[in-house]
Image (cartoon, rainbow, N blue to C red; front, side, top):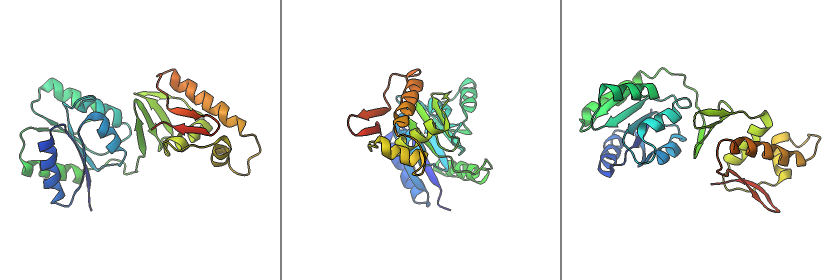
Length: 224
């Protein structure tokens, strides 16, 4: 099996070394240089994550806390030093192991292999999108702001799902109505505007960032 690894570290030399090492052993290696980029790469569902704790922006602990409820794969922290209190924080955030820098590549490969062999979590493919502080869990059909769930009705989530999976693409009301309610539904596409208003209101209660944008005379789109 070709496992997918995500290496998230802000040290280019370490990233290049791990890409070369694991790539030569048949792994598919994705990379990220900061926490925000790591969240984007997590959407590609890696089998294991090597996560530097001290990254700029979102650090490794914050990234781990954001993704752990939605991503089941093993997460191994990379760190230059570690105290017992820090280990507690890391395991509480959902981490599985610590790798101390500088590390032996042979030992790291053995740790990675062991975690992949012992992976006994539920093997469903969670599908998640991270948009700023919003997390959209398509598997659970749930929307979260940071760690707090934003309650949405079925149709409200259907609209969020449609737009967020096609960022930047403009959908007019009639098209949204057809895709969400169905071609044979009896009703009026004006209901789309009301549902989008409700979604915006619920998101606005948590943040002033705009996620669903009105393109006047054309329709709506998810902001990239």
